[in-house]
Image (cartoon, rainbow, N blue to C red; front, top):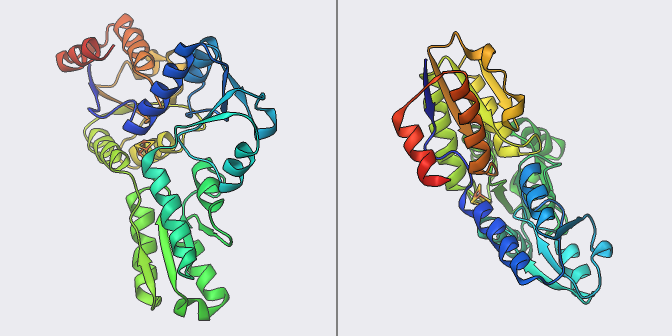
Length: 298
Ligand code: F3S
């Protein structure tokens, strides 16, 4: 049995940066909290809590005089304004790719354009982007876009600016772009899907296509992990989505000739290592390159 790890599995740049900012802050010993989970991984949140970074869910809960970390998904303008009114120090760990979308949305509205956000309506990144607009429209895909345009056909002539959640799939984005280009006459399109997401998704697809089973590691709340599982599921007969090694049942995989492993952008290396160890215990043959990669990264 062969085990192959996607090269891009694990922390992306924005997540690594956010966790590093939290660790640096924890080292100072100053009081600090994170406003919402800084990334979508429970183990990392618990790790930061053990380092003294508490978790709060609203600006009102931030203790006076404390530092407050803005998570990698970003926050709405109203949250930044609420924090500015308190005596706290804001440490903004919003991924720069996400901050850029906030700026695009603000600029679009200043130019009198309608902002269309392609993404999952309930995802924190999407609600934060919407929170920088006065009248955002969130579309989960091409069907939503078609319905929105057909509801009031004059919308096809409106000045429209379309952006994407950074972790959306190429398929969802491309189908929206194709539809909008066909019918809208005043359209600006900003492809804001993150490169790290694209790379991770295409590698996962290639891996899924040549594997008998794929293990996807990542938090249940993680949108990019969910997308990886969906994409792999379309190309591979067996996809197992786990958050941590304890959930893995290696016996389910033991008759598979080749197993791929990929991990969402918020999955730390130590969890990938735990999965590796568990599979090793089950005597699954590990490709040398995988073992070397883990040795280097941990
Ligand atoms: Fe940023 Fe892309 Fe990661 S937007 S948080 S680098 S997936």
